Amino acid sequence: MCGIVGYIGEGEAQPILLSGLKRLEYRGYDSSGIALISPQKNSISIRKSPGKISALEKLVKSKPLSGLVGIAHTRWATHGAPTQANAHPHHDCSGSIAIVHNGIIENYESLKAQLIKEGHVFNSQTDTEVIVHLIEKFYKNIPLEDAVCKALKLLVGSFAIGIISSKEPNKLIGARLGSPLIVGVGKGENFLASDVPAVLGFTKEVVFLDENEVAILDKDNFKISNLDGKTVFKKTTHINWDIAQAEKAGFAHFMLKEINEQPKILEGLINSRIHKETGRIFFKEQNIPEAKLKAAREIFIVACGTAYHAGMVAKYALESLCGIPAHIDVSSEFRYRDLLIGPDTLVIAISQSGETADTLAGIREAKRRGSTVISICNVLGSTLTRESDGIIYTHAGPEIGVASTKAYTAQLTALYLFAFYLAQVRGILPEARVKKLLDELRKIPGQQIEILKCAKSIAVLARRHSHLGSFLYLGRNINYPSALEGALKLKEISYIPAEGYAAGEMKHGPIALIDEYRAVVCIAPSSKVYEKMVSNIQEIRSRKGKIIAIATDGDREIKELTREVIYIPKTEEIFSPLLVALPLQLLAYHIAVKRGCDVDQPRNLAKSVTVE
Ligand code: AGP
Image 1 (cartoon, rainbow, N blue to C red):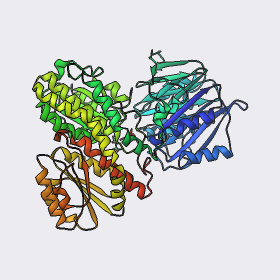
Image 2 (image 1 turned 90 degrees about the vertical axis):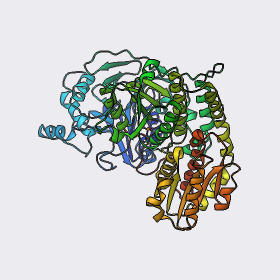
Image 3 (image 1 turned 180 degrees about the vertical axis):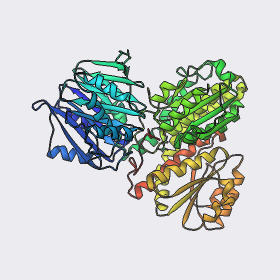
Image 4 (image 1 turned 120 degrees about the horizontal axis):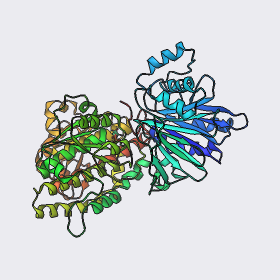
């Protein structure tokens, strides 16, 4: 929900921290701040500002800071409005310790009351400020890292923190529990960051911290320990994508760039998981014994938002291809249910970021009940991947746009491939059928390219409807989740009320909404439920609803019912969500752009919901 960056080295820290913050702005952007240790005065100076990072840049331009050690933060408010006072970094009473934090301290009220009783003075409404005053309380004739560990042991909740102190100016401390934190390993300099893009411009060598680990950095070395100060050996990971991938590559927005990246990403995923000669599916990193997968008697999918919609599609695919019951729930419901799962349940957790608090809590509950957990995730080394029994990476590269696009179709593809893998392990699909289906799957990236070639006409259609005050999305069977996903895309970037519905439910309520002021997006590719969709469209037409249909190339019948048709290539029904997704993404994108919305950083949203 927030982005933190730390630097210790031989260069001026301010520009490095600001550039790192800008690459984390997708994590939260309602206020930001920076703190440096100024070598001359051996004291800490802080600058902070509400609003986006550009506001902070303006502030430090007028009142620059100098120093070789510092921390910085971009915030997505959880406790206290996004004001100057609540912006991070926060400092202790003496002003000699500063902290930045991503996460939520659940017991901060009781800790704050005790600290106030002991004479500490607070300047903000944040939970974070409690941490720095606790450190101050313990920081008496012991090293900074020891005082930090003492403080962290009293916290309940989640944190990724960066800390500096003017009493030990050659030290930068980081620690994490429940929120991501990495060490960037440089030459004569070291970094802390919430995510890899922040350091990629300086180093490709990173260390991913695990839960309850502390990083103690100076400009030439780093040490990782547990909260008891015991050294922990960590391997360094070489990041193989470059900063350019995290840039817009000439597109107007990250979201448009990421929509256009989908064919390449899916092609890479498909080709890297299907053996060229044998046609068998393989997952190097999934590492759950085949016997365990064979023994699973049911599947439970847990995810949030777009990932949840991918999971809904997977439910249809798993049941159809693997003959195994597949249940699904949003993570925030799953984690609090009286779950009837156990050792013979395979739990599939889907998460682009791998840091979604509810999904992490869900898998921890599942593991507590003895279930096996496999995660479908896009972020290497994220918490979800390190707590799952098995992993399938979607390798979609960094998804910077807050509205998920390429991660969604990459999740779908990984889930389809996993379904084939499961069917292969359980030996229940005739080889001829597998071959036919995989041949169709291999065509999808090229078919997506065909759709993207029509992006201009989709943009024109989108703009023609951008004035409408609300949208209804209807789909059936495996495209019912597509309707939910299309509605989510539109609402989260254009702020237009949009609702996804199972088309068969229309007469049970939503039909009351139909009139000439509302657009109804009808997802009607060729399928076993196509005729049912046509009936729905006729019902909408007779009530003057403005119909936008998504249909299969060559379908002339649908053209009789509405002028507004977006065609997609013909594919196996089971794979149609992979194609339907693109017109829905482009529709939402162009409507939002036409309405002047901040497409990449929509209001109130953050890329990763790392708190409940
Ligand atoms: C999708 O466009 C949204 N940004 C949001 O619903 C997202 O899918 C959800 O928060 C889950 O995130 P995750 O995949 O990182 O767990």
